Length: 468
Ligand SMILES: Nc1ncnc2c1ncn2[C@@H]1O[C@H](COP(=O)(O)OP(=O)(O)OP(=O)(O)O)[C@@H](O)[C@H]1O
Ligand SMILES: [Mg+2]
Image (cartoon, helix red, strand yellow):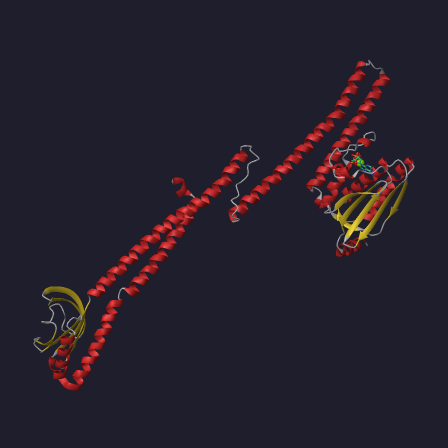
């Protein structure tokens, strides 16, 4: 209960409750004042009408006419709660249904309230009355009044009704407020409980979704989606670190075994030199792997985003092809280049040339004979397409996704040197540039298609100017 009082939700509910109570009470007070006097006002109106009638009689027929009129009214309206009294200057009754001038009623002209004691049907009764007093010519006085018992009863009843209405409204408000607070708290608590168990290590836990589709449900499903995403990323990360640990262990064990064997052979100076050279080569290979891994991680994290500039892919492709020309020649492969200039993209020159080099390296490495064809073209959708096709064994469709994973190599490529990291870097670089990479069948061979968004035209102009 104390905890409930301390919560924000409860404070908010209490604040609304207070506002609600104040407005309900204001409305009820207004209703009371506009209805409670209803009967009194009606009495005043009746008295006013009576007086107008009597005044006409007095004006037309004088005092005698007035006496006759009062007498006729008291005779026929015996049971009516209208009170009449006409007195002479010494307050002696001349006509009317009141025996004497009431003690408490002032003798000034105007409205008076007083209490009346009467004997009606043999019963003495006392009640409050409202009357209007007139002083006529010759100091005669006329009092016309009305019984106010109904007014008092009505006022009391209105007050009672309003009191109960107020009490009921406040009670309902209080119960409703508590109920709402409890409801809100329960759902916040569910989120808290889930986070607590996740902190304690239970990553499978999720925030319950009620299915109502309200804000809490939206919050819950967003939180759950976030947790799913985090879990996926963590699983991916774990997979990568496992792979790295596993794939680096093999070359390290090999290196260690080689050194051990060399040592057991009781080697001469030449053998030592040879073993050291082999060790350095192996270490270089390991360093290469580390560098490749670091480049991939860097590209994936977008760490080099501020190296982005508008670059010409045609120029980059040409320099990579120049670099690989001797390799193609050595392997007896034809290397052809079809480009379009300029092919401007917004990107990181170093990473892009690394990616193209990796694709070209694969094409040359896995193609025993034939040709490697590099085509660069502008597609009409505002993209630059770079295609590298070879006439080698290709990659079976089932593996075209896997070859992008770190350290993945096809069975029949194991005899060729490599780490299985080249395509991982290509994909990371392409993603970083907002593009995509596809592997297609070149029948025979593999066709790798890299699609990058072309740089906007305005950038082209400014680059050309600054270059000039
Ligand atoms: N042009 C290609 N033709 C046939 N198979 C290919 C081709 N390109 C890639 N592959 C297959 O995909 C695998 C992954 O390629 P990736 O470039 O990632 O690694 P790698 O070439 O083996 O090693 P690294 O590029 O790290 O030196 C290769 O081992 C090979 O089996
Ligand atoms: Mg490769």
